[in-house]
Amino acid sequence: MLSHDLAKLYEVEARALVQAVKRNGDRFPSDFMFQLTVEEFANLKSQIVISSWGGLRRSTPFAFTEQGVAMLSSVLRSPRGVQVNIEIMRAFVRLRQIMASRADLARKLESLERKYDAQFKVVFDAIRQLMSPPRPKRRRIGFGAGNP
Image 1 (cartoon, helix red, strand yellow):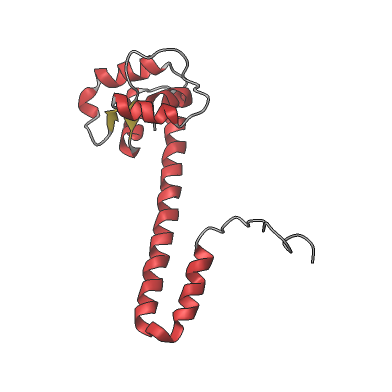
Image 2 (cartoon, rainbow, N blue to C red):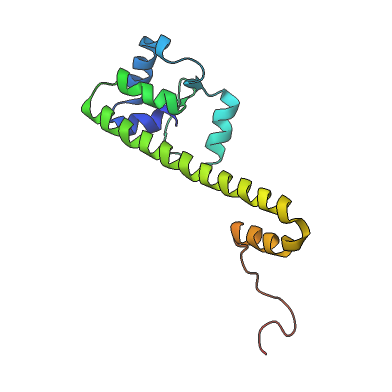
């Protein structure tokens, strides 16, 4: 998550959040947070049609990993900070569970596929199609496309 997004969640100014992090730099190693490069920040801004960041920035924002977000609660000791951190951690746990269940399902499918090989190839192909996101339907163009 980016520093300005976390500042909104914690109801503090982004510069106050960054200042608190810098004062406690030993609590935020490089695998907890890092500062976006100018190029990364430009790419990020180009993907957002309407920028909510407004104005010019003196520096690029910081990006926090799951551990960095968790560490913020010890730096921002407000009740809001603790509650936000709890909810963010719950979201990370739910996301990890979803990803693990998909990976687990894929492993089981591969195992079954190796076991039964060609006998059930058609079944496994159908299951894979069901697991993939649906393709948008395209309207046919030309003679005979509209009316029967």
